[in-house]
Image (cartoon, rainbow, N blue to C red; front, top):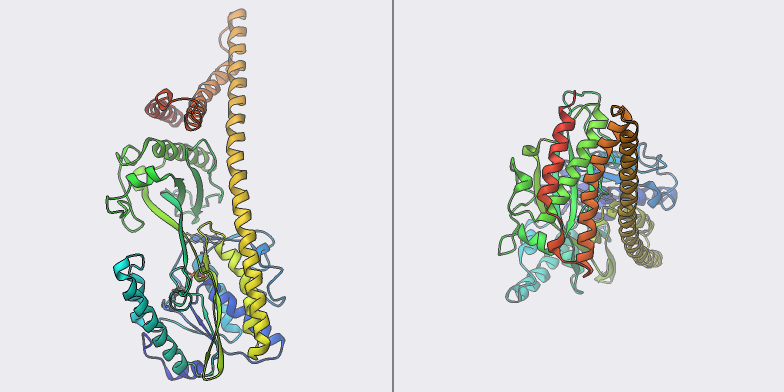
Length: 503
Ligand SMILES: Cc1cc2nc3c(=O)[nH]c(=O)nc-3n(C[C@H](O)[C@H](O)[C@H](O)COP(=O)(O)OP(=O)(O)OC[C@H]3O[C@@H](n4cnc5c(N)ncnc54)[C@H](O)[C@@H]3O)c2cc1C
């Protein structure tokens, strides 16, 4: 069953289709563009139909697209202004990217049918908990029936198609139906606490927030941040802290459901004092907020205090999902059919490089899709599988290396902080001694040094904390020797107030 009636024109397009793609997200559209370009270059007619369940592109999150991941692999005739002509990373909203790709795909003759999906009832499959032993057989039966029904429907709708591609995202139905024979790799790799701040720029119509926001500092947890910048409007700054299990567990109910989810976040005027936040988390959050305030103050040219009553906090569990196989050839009445996965449906790495990485591997898949002869197509699919596996290994190694480099940089940063603190304290002492010797009024230089030294002593509190924590982690000290955060918080709040009180 299709979820909505098809128009006669859509039926005609479906009947002519040779390639069926499920999901018109960025990868489904990109794949169709590449396949259409390869077919056009080889002078082969290729009818591609994409089914998309959403009525329009509505997702607004910001994406970093780095053309170096796919520039060498894409078809040389791919000209998408604002995307392929860029030599460095660009930031673009998800819906803007999908719009660009949709225009190009339609210009190449690809048919996109919206608000449409096959077998509505299949969704209920995904709700069955396959890890629950008692539901396992129910799940397997549902999969077998779902697969039969899906194939029956697709053969009826697209009698000429022999290539079916699932680009239906990280909760892919096609992955669930066709690549279930082997266990699907699903691993929780990160527990995340996400803090989202609202920055009102209505009084600064010309200001658009810089895209780089502080993520390195003496936080207890590694962090990444991204900006949803809108010129002269309310922008959103989001930081994600990769927390430990204990910190994460405090924000979960005993049955494991989140207390603060993306749809129901924690909002409070006294967010940082919330009893569910561990001391470590509170420390990282307040440190990040201070860094943001410092940066905003510089950018806007006047003191800026973040309005915490509009901040939202929630937890996320990032799961690495990987289909162990992503291409198979099935046969029906002696005719071969290729079924493959691409994009988040094939592999979703929650490190935000999934899109770039899939845009590269999709170029190989497109070459295979553009060939109508199943015999000639087979070696191209084999090459696609080989290249993608190699790419996955390379990516895993790179992420591992990146992790090590980041850890090393955090150490270097703490060391540099310590050296700069010692120098500042020394220069302050030196200046005070000079002042005592000459018996003059404190010069502006001395006053400035004094302020700096005070700030440095706060930095010292960070460093001291960091050193104590590290020492206790590696067994050189005890937690009781760790300075109390509240002292640091009070002190830094005082400093912030004093700084903001200045005209
Ligand atoms: C907040 C955030 C930030 C990110 N930032 C980056 C970044 O900076 N760089 C990067 O490389 N990656 C980033 N990513 C990852 C990137 O967004 C994804 O890897 C990419 O969008 C995957 O595209 P896709 O087409 O495979 O899946 P999706 O974009 O999820 O598209 C799947 C499509 O299939 C449709 N669909 C689903 N089921 C069906 C069905 N049964 N029938 C018909 N249609 C169906 C859906 O409606 C959807 O349109 C980010 C992700 C998030 C959430």
